[in-house]
Image (cartoon, rainbow, N blue to C red):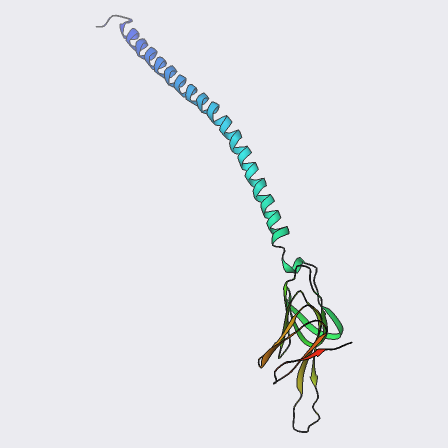
Length: 192
């Protein structure tokens, strides 16, 4: 039979060994946790500063890109000016469909390409100013149908009038005419 207390000492020794092992594990864990805090704290701060700087840089770049370099044409102050009872629609920025009546097409300082379309013709310019009118002309002959006519008065710049039958170019003070079914003509300089 074992002596009294011998088993207790053995059990006490095991318990002491467990406590020493647990203390060692806790010290290792505590040291590695502190080591992580010491190394991650500066990295977290650096990461946060770098993230904020990147977001500010992306925001500033986007602001400059969308507000200066690539300002949408619809945001640019440019409009055609109807004269009288004009029927027209803005199809896209700097592209207008004229069904009837007269429009004054002003130039723009950045000289965008402008396209005005009628039923049978189209007028284009880069930085020019002109008046365009389209109407149905009544033919007096008994068997002839009505003819659509487009007339352009070029005030400045160069304007090109195109139909399925041809193309004509006009400069300041020129008058361009296109009758449906015929090639467009430049009537030359005209005084208002």
